[in-house]
Image 1 (tube, rainbow, N blue to C red):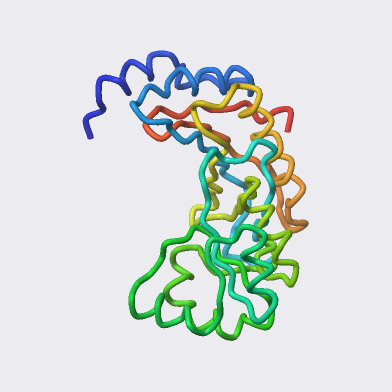
Image 2: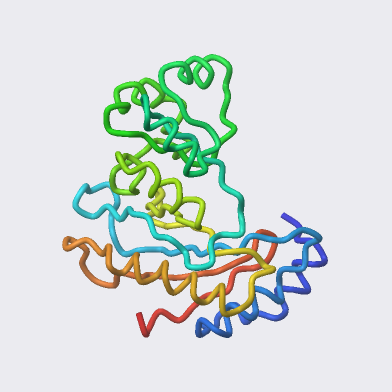
Length: 229
């Protein structure tokens, strides 16, 4: 695949074989983000675990101090007063059974995060085939199955992100935008890495953080030194 001129120029800033300290890595990623739009900065963490084993799963959620820079649309499955509570907290959509055909038959997916009260999980379960593959199923570990819909919606709107392993045992998460200051990106990354280290499974053996890379949407990746973690 031929890389564009911008990417090639950006790649010259970065020593492929080098491992950078966080401050320098953030600075380089910001310099390399030269697209015409505000690029998302992502962290990619390869972990020394085997996610196929239940006792080596790494999954959770963390509120980034400076948010992700993205406006997140929240859908809440709830009943009665909880619907009003969710909407009052700032949920974009809230409701119950009536939302199922809209998602299942009409293919409506105009939301980024789904929250559900525990008594609605039977209803949400019917949407597993649609929501599951898109990573939208509510999950207690991520704090998206809860009776406290106000807190759940507030946290998500404030910049809560969910992290989980993909099939290659890598976690991919946004830590902000190229327009963020270096301090904001550094704070967000530090909050994420602390949470992932805290979530280390007892069954994980050997080196836990195999490699950590941060990159902008269109830019080259910058490898971080994991020594201090």
